[in-house]
Structures are given as C-alpha cells and as structure tokens.
Image (cartoon, rainbow, N blue to C red):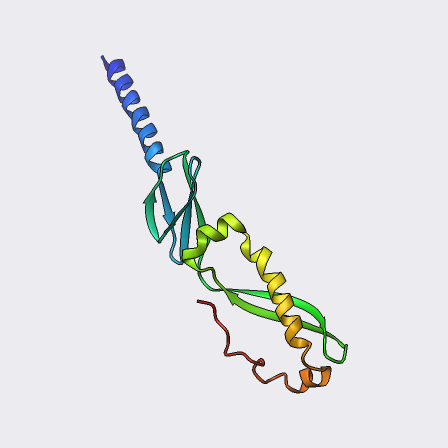
Length: 156
C-alpha cells in the first residue's frame, strides 16, 4: 500500500517537474534598458521589438536576442595627419546607443556585434576629416575649445 502511494507521488512529481521545465523554457526576461528581438525558426527575425518585462515564447521555435539600449561609452584611438602633415594621435570617446525601433533591421543586416563593426570605421573617417582641417599648432593651442561645427551631436 505505501509503495503504491510513493509510486503515485513520484509520478506526480515527475509530471510536475516536466511541466515546470516546459513553462520555464517558455518564459524570458528583458531587463530595464534592454530590448529584445524574436528569432523564429520558421519565419526568421520578427519586426516586433519587445520591451522590458517577462514575456512568453514558443520553446525550441523562438529565441529572444536581447540588446542593450542604454547609452554606452566607447573609446576609439586614431592616428591621423594634420593639415601640415604632422602625425596626430587622438582618442575619441563616443556615447552611443541603438535606436530601439530599428533593432530587427540592425540584427539582420549587421548582427549582434554592430558596435564592433560599425563604430570604428565611421569614427575613424569622421575624425580624420576633421583633424585634416587644422595644422598641428592649432590643434595644440585650441585644445580646450569645443569641436568645430559641433552642437554636441546626438542621434535620435
């Protein structure tokens, strides 16, 4: 009699553990300051951007790709030439963040490491074009002035 009770409790416990595992694999969290894009094995990357909170997905069919949408700093060192052909060693500090509504497009066209791929090349080219306008003496004497033509540019 006791063996049958323990056997039924064991079966119930196993069924409860399996059900709990399925429910746990169907939930995911998006932390504050983050957004998620859903990859579906049958339909690809969905155009919907998921906000903060706990959300449901179809286990083994859908997978969340979570992006950090907070402003983050990045330092880009550049060696370039001035107007009088002197070598200039500059490090540019950038605060960047992705536009949350464009995350599906960013993920499909560039990937999760978009900052590693895009920022160094863009910042290097822009910085070289700005530094090339000045000679070495101007760069040293005007070091404390704000950058030329900047209104402390920010992206929407």
